[in-house]
Image: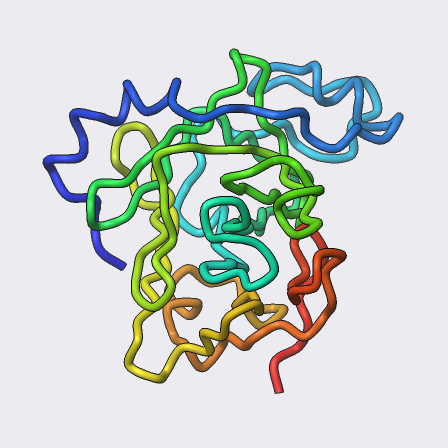
Length: 224
């Protein structure tokens, strides 16, 4: 993985208000009290530690991405998935997503937090409407970030520039990039170094409502 380019650091704080938050999935009844706790606090009966205020490298990994939808235009159907590798909740608010070309946006939800449960995933996309994005349930909609069809980067870092994970896919034939099929990480691979290897990724076959294939927000299919 590579550190964020110094020229991008100046834009990180401004990026925190770039994202367009949409409601996350409705929490289960047992999660409501925990979601109301601040960092470092625990609700009565909470089985999981409260989220850390500053996620560390490896706490969160890029686990799936759709860079080239076929059922809808790219401008309406690109998305990617982040998975919490921890055995407790993780708050994503304040993190920044970028690539090597200057695209970036911040995860911001008005200070309410963006909580992801232990081992759970969150889907970020450029269009929150399942009726026009290929049938994908997007948890957080963004602008200012484009996934190129054949070669690009997805870098997840803190506002201070600490890199949590990065995936850099290319057009050299090693990455399983197919139009209309998302590229998913083999289940069980949650190391931010190991998931750099295209051998641990495969093209999805699970059908999406819009006609493409992928498993956003649900466990990935094992790679053959």
